[in-house]
Length: 85
Image 1 (cartoon, helix red, strand yellow):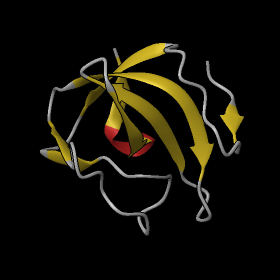
Image 2 (cartoon, rainbow, N blue to C red):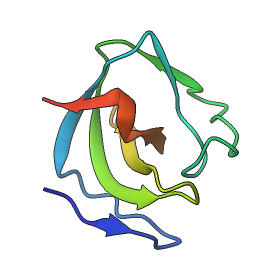
Image 3 (cartoon, rainbow, N blue to C red):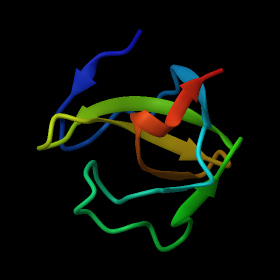
Image 4 (cartoon, helix red, strand yellow):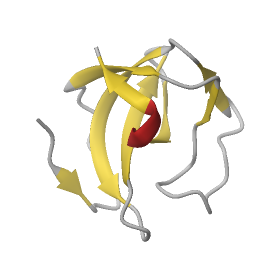
């Protein structure tokens, strides 16, 4: 299980792995669709496995995961499109 955090500095310790379930998923600078995609890795694709480090609730009430990609890049992805593996 996970806990929701609204900290300005999300946790960077991995607690589960998750896989992308759609064709392309934006990786954003902060939780919420209004925030810009990352420049280094703006999109991750179906079946990509990421490390989930924290969970943040956005202004709309959607849970966003703070993820680590390729063991080096951190960003936010909607939990709706990630499935625990």
